[in-house]
Image 1 (cartoon, rainbow, N blue to C red):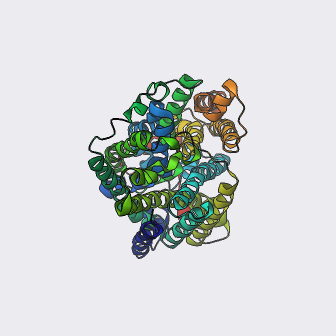
Image 2 (image 1 turned 90 degrees about the vertical axis):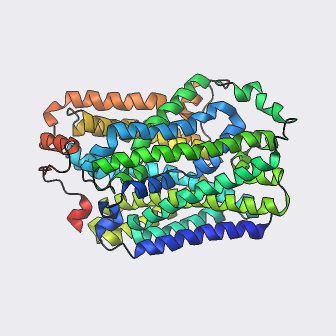
Length: 506
């Protein structure tokens, strides 16, 4: 395809991101603007921002690549990533907003009143954010390489530079506008090319549709250990969403708990609409570019399809549009992840020596640059699978903490720390082994490749049992905290003296 058209698409996407981010900078003045956009983001704007942030490289490219390579089993990825918001809506969204926290470590400290628990939560936020950020940089490298033939490292560097400009300059206020705009950019960038491809084919692929009827591709649970892998994937994606730091922090930006619930309902609609599209690309890829199936280039099927179906200048323009949308996916998700890292490291580490805004900026820059280095060391794991591993860690750590912390008064600091450490160490060890290509074979290899089915129950059990054994250590302000989480915001209640770290510093 035309390199000029591809570069133009990527550059325009980056410039749009920078332009909206600079506009947001004009609105960012206070510490609260940087961390939670002054808690003034309405449900409509926030739903677009949540969706724009959530729809990452795995959603834009990875789902299509997995459907192309592995068939119907992979439909659980978009189903799980969407359904996770239903659980978030029912169990977490409103109480989390009422907590008045800025970050997950803030919530942890509020609920169990332990600095040690807060430190463990802070470390896990960074681990999950880095695991999620690595495939964004990988996807950016894949896209730039597929469009222009440039080295894969160039895409990651470009994303890191643009994200740092946005995050360091304007914080959460700035990226809220960026993420909201780019949800609609990503949706359009997939929808319009898909419509053009479908109109062009006129159903003329009858001779090749036999590829869709391959037994291993269209019948579920045909892989070795397929039943375990499928249910483990469901556990990770359904439960992991509520534990993703960059997702959860967006609910702190709503004005109140009711707005948080309304935001979540709208997110379910927006995600359901979006995920129809990459699935269609995966099916079309099976028909027109079957040679990509099972190869490292399968994630690029969205970018390769127009050239196979359309050809000529039309294919160049359509592919450039897809490239712009893919880059928007990397930029929006990466910016949210860098904000998560900046919020935690800025508060809990650098905030001891620097003013809040300066600490936020420095922590964001350090997080992005360190992750770039880790990306260079990771193996060529499929983008969607790499993201699912981050979900597994989130499901094994913050999901038990949030559900038990919000709905069970018996959670203690010792139980929270034990559960976080147990779930975090088990799941993160499996993830690192998988990403480095060191997973064993057989059943143990299946468990290591997708650990959530084992690590989530262990984390819940550990947190519960240790809490039951340490009931003498229940938080001093437990009753007021539980009322705070579940009572309407209109009721002015004592929060047991809890103030988010950023407010203490600022």
